[in-house]
Image 1 (cartoon, rainbow, N blue to C red):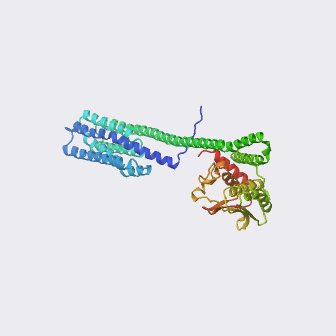
Image 2: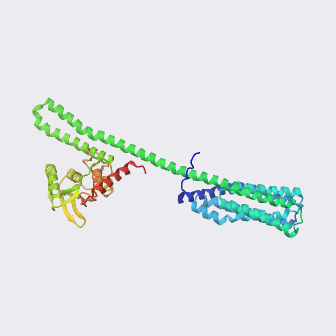
Image 3: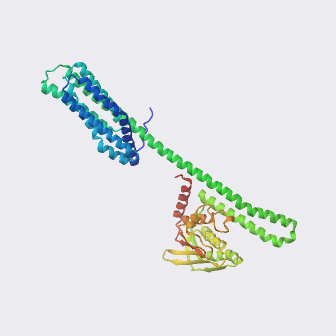
Length: 471
């Protein structure tokens, strides 16, 4: 025997949506069945035309038609102003007017005053068929909303039973024909059968709408996943196009220099530095790619230990001062001695990328590399007098493969440098901030809060999990 599968727990949003759709279904059905209910009134009158008094028929007909007109007005207003609203509006509107259906059941239940034990058996039989058909018809039209259906059936049955018991017990003193008791018994049985049938149909309606809601959620989720996959493909396509373009240039230059050196070896002293520069460009591109792969795969290794800031800045000065001087730039270093807990290799990679960018995008003036002691901890600052970064680009430059379109020099990179810097600084717990003014320069500030090895590893794993998960 297969084990029962526990149904999914409905969320408040799902429950509200389902209730709203049930109301919408009821109104939609009532709109199509309203005419059938109206046709029953003249049919009922024609059967009792010769059996009941005209004033009582007129009064009952007026009440039945007035309530039918009221329901028609409610349905019409709903179609005009509520149908496009949210589930809350549907529920509030229907709860305000659903009493009309209960009153209609009361009027039809009172119709037994006109025929029960007052007309021929044939006419009584036809009237009971009309009431039975009306009750069964309500199962189809009102089962979407269980409370309304039960109120309708209970009111119709209890009113008819009250009239019959009053006739049998009060007026006839229980001396009437025996078939009266059979009719009462049949009415009780029929009432309970209709309640059970209505409950089952309501459950079917509810399960259908719950399934529809969850299917919609699944479709929406699949749509988001598909879009995420398409976005990933687009990013990789842009990456491949950018990689092919950016790697082609230095590799092509290497090929030209090699051919040139082969044909004119006496120019080796001129060609060799150019080959070295092209080789460095290729290495820099591949370094960025390898950093990106390690970050995205979660295979980055952390070694947290005290880092001597004076030695770190001195090593960076030795590496980048010649590049700055070659462009005619001043390169200044201001060191406040001290140390901080961090990963020395990753920290050097972060600061080195920032210094490299500062030198690359500065055409005149200079670059300042400094450490300061602040109330938040020690801080490394990289100042430049370059072209600056417009406010519209200051958030975007930390995105993968993003290149500021107006910056010269961006064509020889992947747009990964600052993306890698942002990822590494987040993993190490070193907040990175940026201030920049167009044509005046830029400053990056890296606050060196002490890094906890376990926290850093957790942040790295979390970053990878966010990359591989689909929203």
